[in-house]
Length: 288
DNA sequence: GAGACGTGGCC
DNA sequence: TGGCCAAGTCT
Image 1: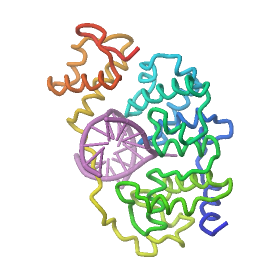
Image 2 (image 1 turned 135 degrees about the vertical axis):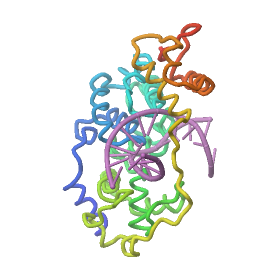
Image 3 (image 1 turned 30 degrees about the vertical axis):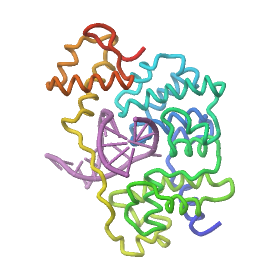
Image 4 (image 1 turned 180 degrees about the horizontal axis):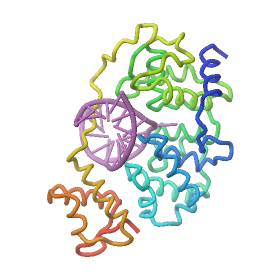
């Protein structure tokens, strides 16, 4: 094992967080649910939701047996509620196509709704111990700095970047732990803002640090807009549906957004996306 | 490949 | 205070 691997695996062994989906008793389904919830969402906000979901829906079949609207409701304020819809659809596909067992093959995982390259690789690795390159925002940033000497990776994953990550992926059964260890290093030490190089186990090997931590010079990174957007409007409307016991009247939706055109557009969008249904001339609800 | 898609916390 | 950021996916 190289210095690089020994340093990062050793650091992980000593400093990893105790997260329930990483425990030995965690099931592949538990891993999969955690990966959906963790997409673009901090661990601290996922923890309570994951526990609630695993208690209520300990298997794909349990989730698939309920209406998709219940998944959306139980998603609460985690954000990106289409993830709840897709996780529900993925559970249904697992029941129908895989006898209720989360598939262990990358290609089978990738075919599920809401599962892209990252999630397929993560579930195969962390749920089944298989060997895959796992590229999330943490891993990409760690390798950009450590191996390429850049503060941040390029906006999109490049072939060279994937090849570089593959070149350091262990060939033995430590590959999955290696991937989660690099992710953890990115989450706790090699952070986007104010990285803690003084606490980094591979600072002595880091190309970015050796180069004097040059500031990012690549293409401008996209900034999310928020206030006043359709996205904010959708969030307001869906919150009303989610917090209601049954169908709500149009007036209850009108009360939370004062621009009629935008409100109507957002509501149509929610219906088109399957996050809401119109159940009467002027009433709406979560999908059944 | 750019843009849409939630939410909340931090410095 | 508000821009930035958090284990991405889909179109």
